[in-house]
Amino acid sequence: MSHVLPLVTATAVVILSGLVHGLWSNRWGGTEALDRAVARLEAIPWAEIDRKLRTTGAWVGEDGSLPEEQLVQAQLSGYHLRRYASPEGGEVTVLLMCGRPGPVAVHTPDICYRGAGYLLVKEESYPAKEAPFGLLGRFKSTQPLTPGGLAILWTWNAAGTWEAPANPRWRFAAYSALYKLYVVCPTPSTDGVFQDDPRARFMQQLLPELQRALFGDT
Image 1 (cartoon, helix red, strand yellow):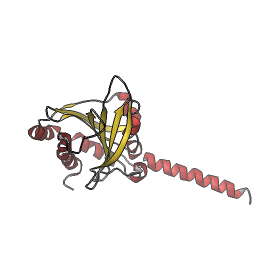
Image 2 (cartoon, helix red, strand yellow):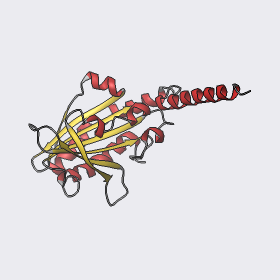
Image 3 (cartoon, one colour):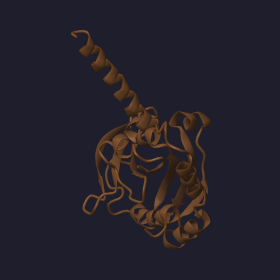
């Protein structure tokens, strides 16, 4: 009997570990929900969105692309990369990704941008005073030839609500598809972006448009 209990315990641990990994990787989930999420991503009316952004802030956007190895590493099923510039607002890069919750829930900017020479120095909820829907990280360059910093907003959405939970891996484990949004702004310092800035107004117009395109008027 003394040998049975350790064996049962070890078996339970193995089963539980497999269950947790299965949920995290969506091993047993179908592809229909993910396919629908990718289809909504691909149907975003960027031309219409860009027209509205041009009339309110003279923002001009263009498509970008990610390296193939980065797509494989992040296990993305689809994405849009848009770079915007305005004579009065500076530059903004918008990266909207879609994939299975396990991989998409991880790879946050504090990890991703470290390899590019940026160190996270401050993290806060965004917006700071209203109901937050994301995290705003302020990064400084560690490279002498590229001084300055980045302000990066990131958030997730699985069912119509943008949020940045403390543990996104667990929060979104039950879903079959997950969106993740990065908004990246170069800045000369680690202060002042998204508070009283043209790029804050850019965000106020862009986010409702993305919400309607992905989830309708919910």
